[in-house]
Length: 98
Image: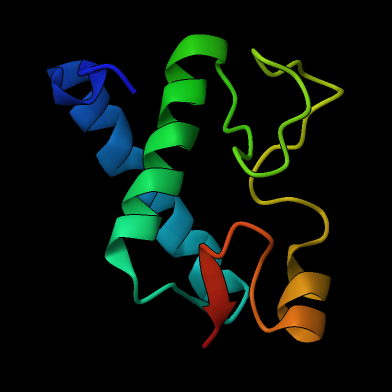
């Protein structure tokens, strides 16, 4: 990213996204990765997608640059529950079973 993460708009959107992801984790009986650098990176990239495209596109499953609604996956992805059960984490390594 290019310094945009220091703007007040980004900071507010980041906090809102982090709160949204916490609610998702609670609902899915998951927790965040204990590596907060990883969490910050994934949440930051997802927040940037929100600010640029209006959707929380998954940065780890993104096929297009920029992501395209209907082609790229948004978070939480439909496979989240299955990945937590099968792999012990989601593809992005953001969520782990609680």
